[in-house]
Amino acid sequence: MAISKTQPMRSAEIALVDAVNEFTEDLASEISNRKLADNALGERIDAETQARVDADADINAIIGDGFTPQNTIANSLSATNQQVLLLGQDVDANTNAIAALQAFDANIKIGKIADIVVPANDSISTSYVFGEPFPDDAACILLAQVITDELATLFTYTLIDCTYSGFSYSIANSDADPHTVALGFVAVNVNTI
Image 1 (cartoon, rainbow, N blue to C red):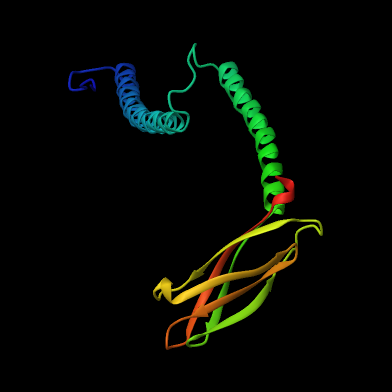
Image 2: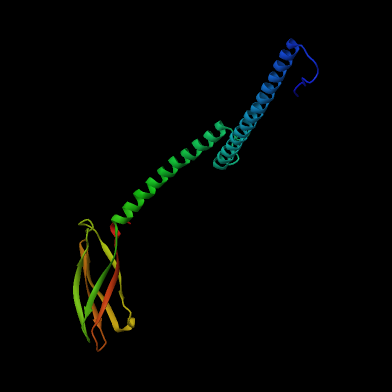
């Protein structure tokens, strides 16, 4: 608050009052500027604090419960190592299973012969060659069935011969109309059983 100069004063007193008034105004301006700066700093601190809280929440969302005295980095790595060891055992087991499947696959053929046209009241005899034959000394058995949308009793399937390289067969049609059928088959090399 400024000092009044309405009383009779000497010039030194007036100069002193003017200096005090000027200082008071400067001090009030400085306080006002500092309050503005403090408010701006407070807003920046609040914004930074909120950004850190949000970042912590994001990190917590990523790591879940996070690390505790019971759930330490060492425990987590140990659990991960156990899982990796189990994967190694699974790979070994799968390798054995794959070898068994490959041996099985080498001794069995499964397929379908499509678009076999069987004439009306007649039969068709033909043969099928395996894409990859069994070994020359294979003893094969073959199971087959006619696949059709018609009555299955219209068709009679007969196996003529089965060798390591393929098989011969006949399909008879007892209907007055020709039909297009398929033949599904499973061939097995029984020498390995």
